[in-house]
Image (cartoon, rainbow, N blue to C red; front, top):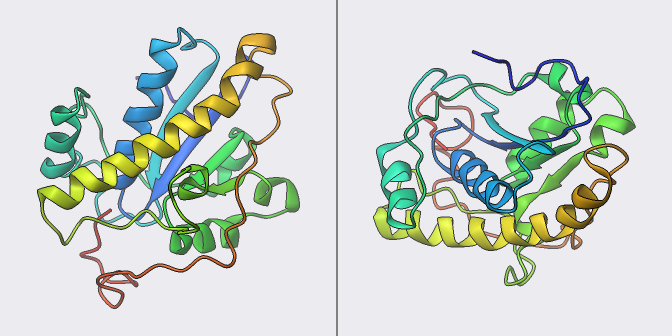
Length: 206
């Protein structure tokens, strides 16, 4: 099986979506952005992967509710297998997209230099309807309706992100593309429905 994070020799622009356990939010984002890339005929110019900050679910499929939510919108999430983000990937990635600020903090802590840190963005900052909210809410402890709602946010954000990437990808391939810009994120606030459960406990999900 080819390694999506193999050393870069092909000029492909590489993106990794990162959440907590890589079974809910980041798989959704990976599937949605990859679908946009494929429909645009740019499979050979951009590679999309995902990972989690934790290792609790490594090797597992996406959460069944993630797969079902994706299927309701016409996506296929069946082939996903969870993995943990490896800081060594920074050298191979052009863009690391965090699903919320807790992931952003962890990833920034792993970054060894300014070049690595400059690649990190929050997905919600691309959402034109975010109203300044920085985090894509974790649906892990919620119901199917919340999974659908979260997927909608992810779709909007991914479409906006791809709209920034596509012109450069079509013009010059994966080389020399600047990390896309986002709206300011420092002043935004949001509410984590289960903050204590999402900080360091091995049952964490997405």
